[in-house]
Image 1 (cartoon, rainbow, N blue to C red):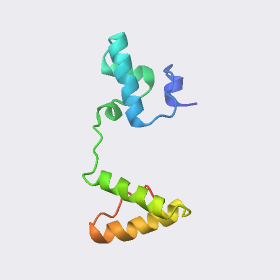
Image 2: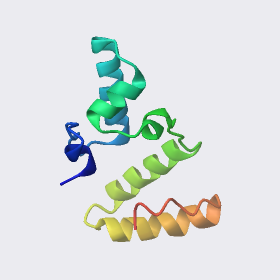
Image 3: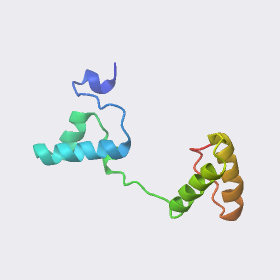
Image 4: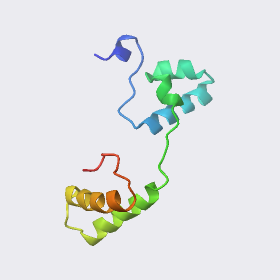
Length: 102
């Protein structure tokens, strides 16, 4: 039994942080409640709500390269694609990756 469930709050289904932020904002606007109350009702930490996601400057280029590698080597799995991406991106741009792929 989760902590939020014991306190009477309805637990939020597993969603991404961006979707959870959107849910809290929706509850705030529709019910005209504070951020604190909306977060508590939905079982979300306020720090998650307030944290602004930061993207990388080269994220679009990385995504385009991953799509191109997948297109070029269609039968490769994600591990081989990630290995090829690491070989190219770690040497050319100094970007070693986030570790989320491979």
